[in-house]
Image (cartoon, rainbow, N blue to C red; front, top):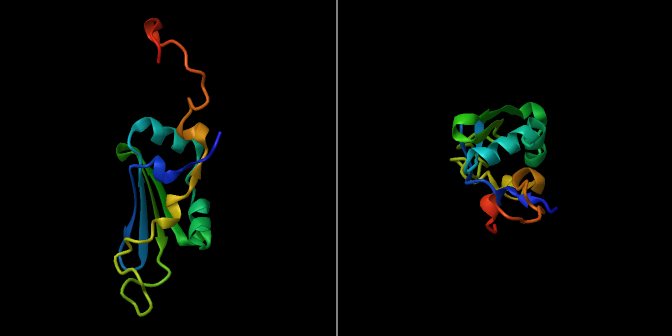
Length: 126
């Protein structure tokens, strides 16, 4: 089984300011079943976000699974305050790129991958 990039599974992958000192990352899945499998597999952790963004884990302030929206939200300290000299993304809207190529185990996001197709209910072909 091949890993699957997050961008092929999630409906929304975005970043935005969470005030001038913090950045929030959102990953929203298209439906409950994929979200549940990803959540139960423990794919998203503060340590993962820290590794992807090259920051100490202490800089990842929160990681929340928000079940009603099938979403994972992470909040981290911005490396440069929004609007400060040298800051290149005042709205924080261009910081989601490290998530796009995050590889998820195919067995988690497509559990039937590799299954042999057989007759469906009532004997019809799938």
